[in-house]
Image (cartoon, rainbow, N blue to C red; front, top):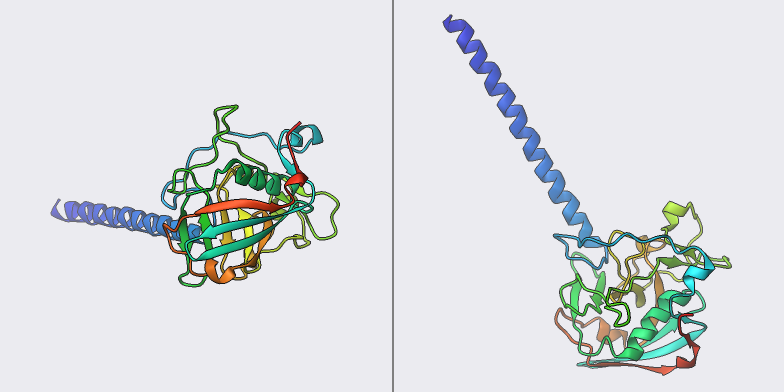
Length: 254
């Protein structure tokens, strides 16, 4: 009888050890998954992504017309505490993404907002701002609808006639590189997991980060003042931001 009880107790101990080991592995896996999200310029906090309303892929031309569009290029000057950064916004390759940005600049949405996320370690990555809440979870609330304006993911392949909408290149099976690439000084739209969740948050790349190509929408480049961008710290404010050229290329939604 004693031998039988010893056997049962030994089996129970082994089972408990396996269960505990499994829990520890799960915890490590979860931690690893969270750490990899640091290398993604999304519009959420790293610890808890926000819940997003489902959106329909805006592939039809009639659906795309509900967004502001930039038919050409525009120049924007962004004043920081150290000086002025000049950005050329490209509506020829990203008409909706560029149009959304220029529309928000025109509205004064970005004035006095902070850069809430700056990643330089272990290597220079991005400076991200444009969140009205200042914590990485907010977006532009359209005063007409009372809800957050969200635009579709929009990336034009090299040699393509039209951008790919609502899908990453990997999801769409596109093997060509995008027309606008993530080189140092690229200005792109931040988003969370949903491709069509971009709103007002944008980021500026602090180095060439080509692994983001085909997954996030670049819509312009810093043409002057990159040395000021390299010095941006978390909490630094956009003192003012104005369109100095090309505002006539902004087309209102129809």
